Image (cartoon, rainbow, N blue to C red; front, side):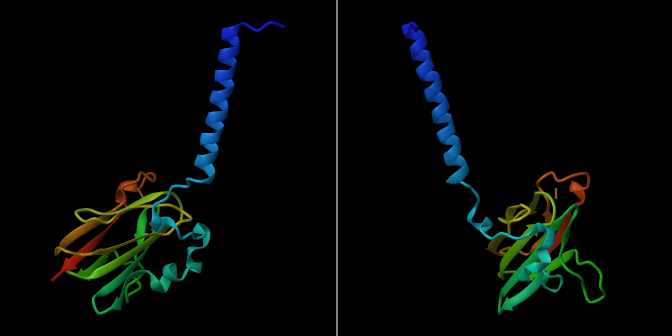
Length: 167
Ligand code: CUA
C-alpha cells in the first residue's frame, strides 16, 4: 500500500504529539504533585480528631511560649471551629497580643475552604486530607476578620471569625 508522503508526515506528527501529550501527563501526575510546602502533612478528613492538633480540647488559641501561640482550627461548612470557652460556648473570637509569633494550623472536614485574615499575610487554602500551616507575627493591633475565600457552598459567606490583636 502506498502512503502519500504528506500523509505519512502527518501520521508521524499525530502519533508524536500523542506520545508527547501522554509523557507530559505522566510527568504531571507522578512527579509534580504541586502543593505548597505547608500541605505536606496529611490527615484523614473523616477522623480529624485522631490528630493531636485537632482534638476538641486542642482547638483554638494555645500559648506555647513566652510570646508564642498556636491556633488550631477546623474549617467546615460553614464555620471555623475554634473550640469551646469555659461556658461550653463555641469560640468565635481569638485574642492575640501584638508582636506574638503565631502558628496557624487548619484542616477541612469536608470541602475546600479558604483561611484568610483580611489585612494580614495569613491566607491559606484548606483542603480535606491536608493540614495547612502558616507562621506569622501579628504586627499591628486591631480587629481582623478571619474569612473563607473559597466558595464552599450555600453558607460560604457566613464562614467567618474574629481575630483581635491587642497591645
Ligand atoms: Cu468555606 Cu467558603
